[in-house]
Length: 99
Image (tube, rainbow, N blue to C red):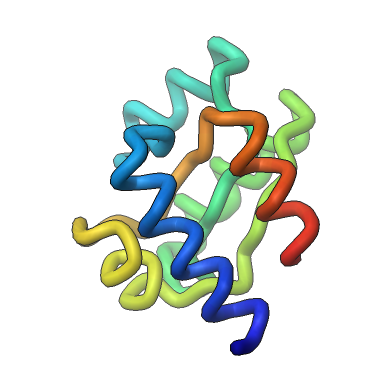
């Protein structure tokens, strides 16, 4: 199994465990409140959205993964999203290892 598939499987587990935040507005507020430990930005999301979240994550020192497709992220968590944040430190550590 590739790391890409392992990340997708782990995202599904994190979703079922209730450790993710999804949706642009909610994630943006969570980043500002320093609740986000890892951020997924779909590689095929809009340019302005990608820039906004990359800038915020850089300012607040949040690690980012931009290598996932929107459809794959959506399938992994069961919701149509292009921005997914992980708020649990344990899951974040594993995502950093798999990146």
